[in-house]
Length: 135
Image 1: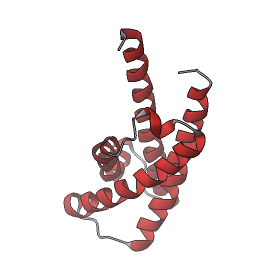
Image 2: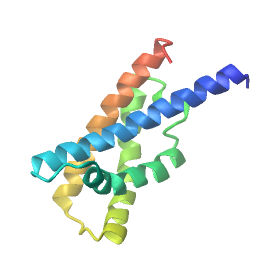
Image 3: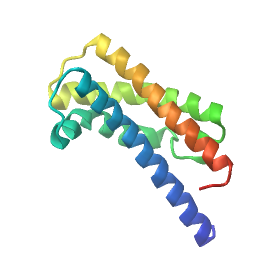
Image 4: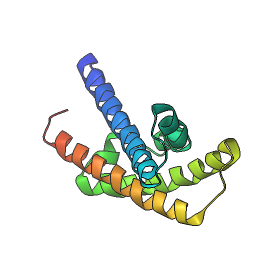
């Protein structure tokens, strides 16, 4: 692989990963605001941590950063959903075991839907953008 291709691939992966993490943080921020919780950076990171950790552990194993995961807008949305379902399970276990939070079905459903929407939207935009040769 040529050095410029490797650099472009690494840059694309970093951009995609950062966007994913921002979407998870955005969900957490919206949730904290909706529930009138104090929104400091420490509280935000602590609250988001199970989902950020779950994403970083699970998403790469499921191919989230392979080019095929964002090969089309439709694929990007579908893969975001499939990957998030697995991440959600891992994150809920992390949240319960290491953060002492109980499993609440309504929270799990809202988290599943909202994060799927945010991640799918971001990845669809990213897919569209890279298909134009911009990254």
